[in-house]
Image 1: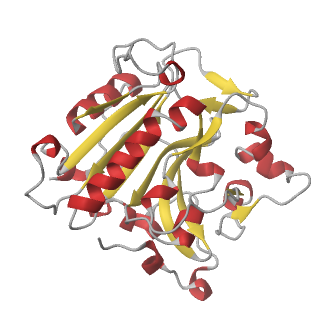
Image 2: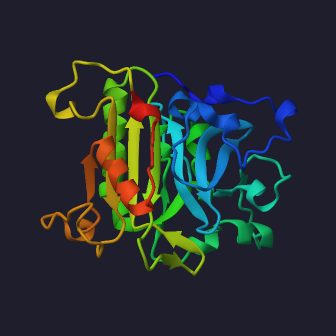
Image 3: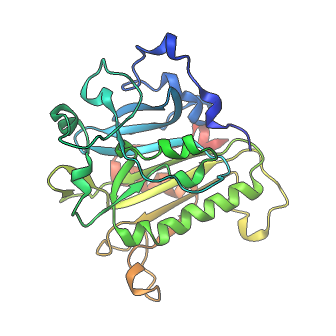
Amino acid sequence: MSGLCTSLLILAFTTSSVADVGDFTPCLQFFYRSWPPKGLAGTPICQRYNNTYHFATLYSRPRRSPWLSAYLYTVPTGKRPKASWKYEPQLAYPAADGNMMPFLPGPVDQNVVESQAVELDYINSTYSRGHLNPSLHHQTYQCRSSTFTLTNVVPQKKWSNDGPWENLEQTVNKTLAAYCLGEAYIVTGIIPYQKDEHWIKNRVAVPEYLWSAYCCRKYNHTIPNRLKDAFPTFAAIGRNDPNSTEEIVPIDKTAKKQFRGYDVRQMSLNSLEMYLKDRFNTVVSVFNEQCA
């Protein structure tokens, strides 16, 4: 598997004034054919950590949470890093350093609080911090650590995050590690409520569903029959609300009680884009020419 994110080191001396917020140009390498998804409006963030670009995020300032994150998959090694949560300085101060910064002990700068989610938003809420770009899908410790930024996180119910959605992330990891021979581009995003938006602490919008899709053009063609629909593209939608209706993702009534209502439905990329179009009332294209 190629495409180590550590190879995407930027020249700190020449790019110290680069705007990492507002333009995907510095991090187009995380999109298939350098083509960001079309149809969704938001604030682009090139996620920079220790002067290295690691992934890209389309962020919603009004929701204080991301619409989607895009990244290159690499086979993970080592242990999951300890969660050291970070924020994006350029959302608060456009002229700030573009590197994501850790939250320090004590009060948080008010401009940061107003511009994005902070740790207090999640503390004592009924939601966990759900990665769109999971640390599991990266090889190096630095790459994995870079995913622990609140601009890559949405409010996700614990039994989704620790249950069916985690199972999906594990399935994608095992499938790509075993059969993808080239670059694997992944985009993971959210679907908002159609009406009656849910919020934590009246600040951070809660998604009704999460979705994910990958594109791997070069793969082992001797894949088992059960994975024949997993290449070159694959998609899925997961429930984040057990009380949502079942038109998009049905509920498995036989699932363990704590996981019931947090089902994940695997589907084609076509089907995913159909559901996105229906909810966003516009054509949403995840990959250039559907990864053709």
